[in-house]
Amino acid sequence: METQSSAAGRLPRPLFCALVLFLLEGSVVYQAYAVDVEVKDASNETCLFGKWIMNFSITYETEHNEYKNTVLTFPEHVRYDGSSCDNEISGPVLAIEFGEGHSWNISFTKTNDTYQGIISFTYNTNDTALFPDAKMKGLITTSTNYPLHPVNLDTVFICQNVDFVESGSVIQNFQNVVLEAFLPSGNLSDQKTVCDKDAVVTPEPAVPDTSSTDTTSITNTTFIINTTSITNTNTNTTSITDDTTEEANTTILSSRSISQPDEIPATGTYSVKNDTEVCLLATMGLQLNMTKTLMNINPNTTTASGRCGNRSSVLTLTDTDIVVVLTFAVKNTSFERFYLKAVDVTVTNPVNGTQFAASDNLTFWEASLGSSYMCRKKETLVVTPSCSLHVFNLRIQPFQVQNGQFSIAEECTSSDFLFIIPIVVGVVIGLLIVFAFVFYMIGRRKSDSGYQAV
Image (cartoon, rainbow, N blue to C red; front, side):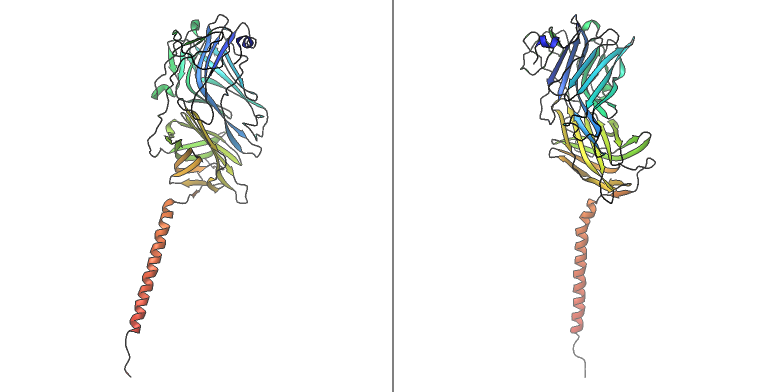
């Protein structure tokens, strides 16, 4: 933990920033961190309050002209130079730097009635841990608006369900968002608005109460930068002074039921476009089994994205807090055939944390290039020992789609056919036995016909 004096020297004067990162506990592959932020001005008034969970899904091209997907989350240690309240019109700004040259910042602007943030995310493909075989090396920057729609001034923006924004090859997933910029008198507003994902199906989470003074001590799991006292705006607020780190317990609601019924999921139709032309087509019903928890992918709430190439194509399906990335490749043989090469699954759960499973050495759904693959029966794709996908009513074509239509299909081996084979063999053997017995009896009758008269 840095001292307050050293932190002060890194922040623009006379403006200060408070940044708190909390570790969410849970048995996950990737540690998930929630961001709890207050940006304060010189008079110690809050100009930005934000609280959310987020991760990044990045698709990149490899040296072998294939596309891979990698998932990036905020690590435990980040840098935050450049965060400030700025001025009355163009601020505030939250800037985060982390890892090997990665940075994320959001700057807010306002009109007479609304405010909105502009996200700039820069990732470094020289980071060999995340991009071991990237074709393009260096810094890549994408930008997008968030929230997606302008928010009325003096209004808190809330999004409990997973809300994602896509820009270029990056999908940013947000969840459990509580956000307000340009706070009047430094206090959160009583007025609230929700994102599109929350508008119909989910209740609004409670807005933190900044007036409470109840405090609860915890162990040293927070990273705090400030030169003055900071007020943590959870339901039970905390005063943080010179050498004391305190925070309150928080309650986070899950946006998806922990268990789903064991039923056949609805079949959805998905497509990916290359400019204006459809280059990938898929119809399927998907059910995810993550650590023995079944979750159906709902086509009505699922969005499809991705990219197409000559040797590799990617289909990304995002349903609320589930992201499934399917990567297809072409085999380097004299008979060109495509197959499912990799599957990446990310489940964002505010109770258990972010769960991630991936495998890039698969050989499912193989068919000739220029045709489609079809399987009417249930197929189970084992991604890892704790993660599998159940697929129903599948038809997919990741390459050479013509006029937005499926080409002739190559079907999987039917389980019914496999079941019939032993029956047919048994019947044939039985008939052979019957025929042999009949011929035997006929031959025996001829031999028993007696002696002829001389």
